[in-house]
Length: 564
Image (cartoon, rainbow, N blue to C red):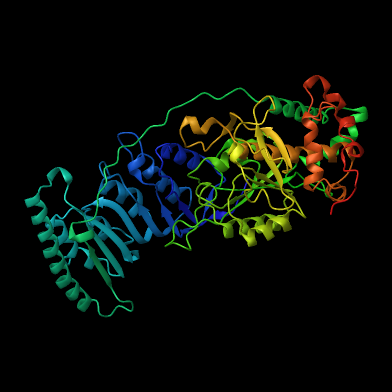
């Protein structure tokens, strides 16, 4: 279990109705392995408009109280709460569970006409330096904010932004609209006057006090949304693939060697090292880097095989220094790929590199950084279940360099007869993967190019686990496509590397020298899964006793010998 302390808690991209925020909070607060620094750089909640239930904020107070008591967090450099625009939290609830528990510098709570006394009364009121307030245009509230009992009490403020909302559509007609705009202009004049007075009173400040009253485009007011949440349908999970059942039989045989004697006793110690996270004597579990959009660290099925993670994704173009966590994801794809690899080999170690919020926003430079990071971790395999249709010289150079050291599995296009070269799959040295149905036939959408070095792997309706805090159809559903086949291929390759080391008394260096870390070498092994002229490397339960013989390195290595 990872023990590094986290510097942020960013769920700003959790804005799909499929996400169950309450479930996420339960997962986070029930795990002892998540540690936080006393000062968090930022805490961003998801848009609570997308939450279900009559009390959409359920889980928010529990989260912050847990951070304070169990997480030992004392200070928040930046706090952003995009509350429900229709059923927001009360001022008292936020004061009790958030404002009175932490020293907060930058504060942004999306709620109309808050009572500023909640900030003024806070034991940490001197900590506020930057706040954003939302106004319906109620002048009584605005007057209080600008009075000597309002913002003036927050003596260390450096920046204030007040957003005045547009007129409620239900109350809007031409006369009311004109009156509302006139009032907004009058409010701004009064605020400008108050601001000048406040600046004169605060002239001892070292940093200039900034104040902005924002009344929206064309002076009509800022938009206030009232979204209607959508609810995902649920679906049942398919039965387990035959290939996964066969892998299970092989894994069970490996576990049985721990109790066997006689000729199997010599495999026992080697397998013990290969299934132990730390390993020993140049024998250690295969390391697989997943270059994707992160993975749910709370997923019980994968959390124990995650060794390390990193994120290269910034929250937005204006927050270049705010990286989204790799372990809290808004898209299920990376978690599903991790689940598939873990299904194929439960003893591997996963290295998660987040390079996108989804699969369609991956930047080549981020992918380059992720691959270089993976090589620094000395991984055995890199799994890339996404494609680009353009070539990028820097990415190409990085990929081709990586293929000289590790196995790089890449997805091909799912465009059927219209498939063409996609990247990074078509860079030199990668292992290109196409998806088949459960009978081994290439799917209609799979890349069938004759010049491609393809490993055909099942990729149709494969059971995979998504983030536990998403809807049931995602948390326990099925996925299809070459990306699925790629993850399974990477997992099977890692299991193959283990089998070769267990049954041949060799280590990683020997496998590398014998060419098993080249695309030709691993394709030579995995292609025998469906070769009718070669005994199955992943046999049914009844034939597992033949595994040591079938995994003879002399039968499986390339005839040409070493790696280029």
